Image 1 (cartoon, rainbow, N blue to C red):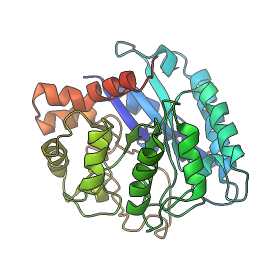
Image 2: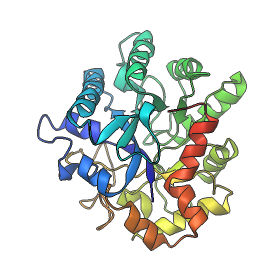
Image 3: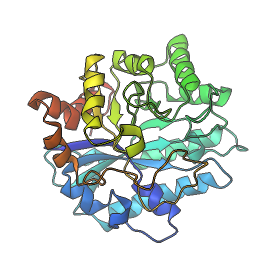
Image 4: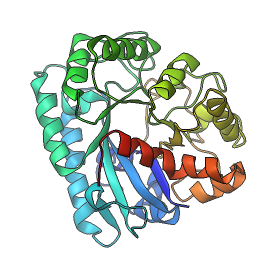
Length: 324
């Protein structure tokens, strides 16, 4: 079955590894061979950096890495403009994970707008998340209780009508509510998604969505990508089905998709990722080759399997004005 996935950290892991890994390194969990084995037809590549001095340099470096990816693997990968489900290649979109990636704390907000436009000339940007785990100039990440700040409002206004979604996966609860309220108040045409999040009612974790927020994404015909990280799923792989059942019961059958969040080769401090364990992913479901195995284990009806695997994202892209 063809697969579309909303989030992996291939570019970020290479950027942070200082030359240790490349696009085919299995340690990354989302290498080109692994994506190919999993029959991934469209993969959103996160451009991601932790808010700190020099983070925009890492962001711009990831844009350059993408150019290199297209150049070095012309027979195996391609840009979104040539995407089709029948293609033999893996195709890509950008997701900006943490707006600090394109604008540091002491820069003009115009830097974000300019760098966004430059990146979008190379590849379409499916979504922007304002934060990562911590607080920044745009708002509060999921480890905080901070809401939306003025620079975050300016980013939302900038995205109005650009067919780029705002991503709630790394927001604090306060920021998620504030984003929803601000978009509604201003009448902004900005789709709402959670690119790689599960459900707090199934597994209690502040990276997982509150039901009220998930229901609003569903009501707005957005997407919620099933995250594969062990500590966001539950005690064993059977918990994947619990998350899917929960969102379907909330009326989200047309919103579910994959957002596996595959990454590897990174050594992140516990203060940046509290609760992380030595085992990042479940055995046999720990890299991009695993989607077909997971679909088989889930044993969903064919219609729901196809929606999860690719159909819901295809519908979202069409309805949000994206075209390849």
